[in-house]
Length: 105
Image (cartoon, rainbow, N blue to C red; front, side, top):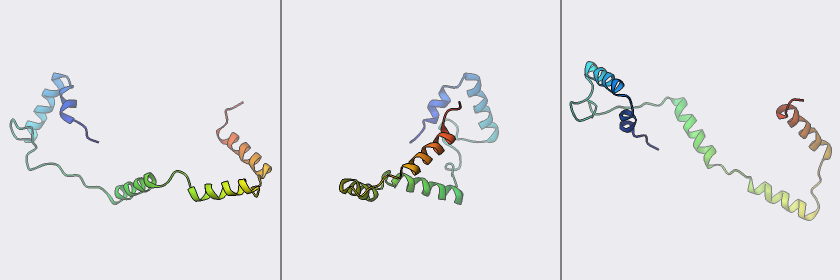
């Protein structure tokens, strides 16, 4: 995904554009008339934490949403009549959910 920074800059009021140009000129940035930064460009360095976070995000995105093996096991147990529902446990989980996320009242 990319952002067109030039388009964003063009949408700014004329006074803001002039102020930004003045700041650039005062700082000695840019090459006159080219719109290119002096010195070859900007660089970005990521911290180790950012790299780890990026790897985790990628792993989560690649992970299956459903455990197909477990679904298959449960389907087979239901089909064979072996699956037993623990009604008390289901009721406890419903009450727990309601306490945590239910509407007041």
